[in-house]
Image 1: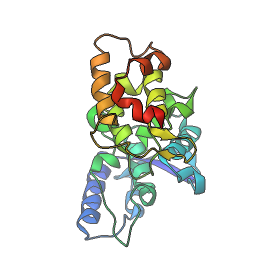
Image 2: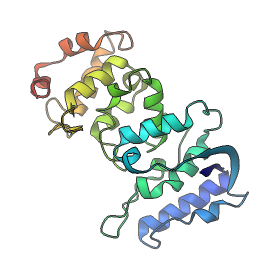
Image 3: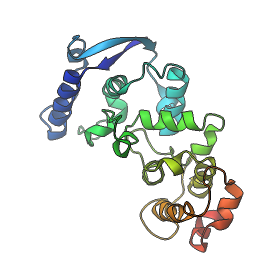
Amino acid sequence: MTMLRSLTHEGRRHAADMLARVRSGEASQLDMTEFDHPSHSGETGLSFPDPTGESVASRWHLGAWLFRTFAGAEEKMDAGAWSWLGLHLFDVLCPPKAGVRKVREDARYLLEAGDYRKAYRHLLAGPFLLMQAHRSDPDAVRGLLATSPDAPGEVYEQLAARKYTVTSRAVVQVATFLYFDLRTGKLKRGAGGSTAGSPRRLSEVLQQFDLTYDLQAISAQRLVGLLPKEFGRFLRA
């Protein structure tokens, strides 16, 4: 079992410096022992088993593991705790490929809790909150979390950027129906970019629908019926 810690303000600044060094190639990995000092992190009183195997097969599996592990402990899961966990699971969220790590923006690992425009980008808090919002039907979000743990994917990026879409049961169900292939467990071909029927187009269409329809109350069947013909290729697939 691993004891969960929470980054302090100073620890967060040090983490940003470490990420910058890995991003530039000056370092190849993070040294978590540097965050054991009380000036860099504090105890939360929570312990957890590290995810392995199927738990990190996709963002959906990782989100399910996060929800099973931390549901009920939200009061202790502050921005510092999510940020420490993002560093602790750095090998999962930023795996080396051909000996090189592609370190994304800090917000992917260090939670920007006060800024929703960035908070949803956190690679752990994002899937957790999505699972929490749709805990009665976790399969509904499979299309938003079908990618690998280090790659959010276009479906998630386009829909999670707005609370009124990502918290709508109908919206996530329809997105999964459109873009997720249940047979392969992966996204359908073409579920990206900005062409007709793409997740980006779906986001634009939903912005228009939100002016007329209550996306929190609408049914998935009704929403599918409102979609323009351009989405037909994904419906047929």
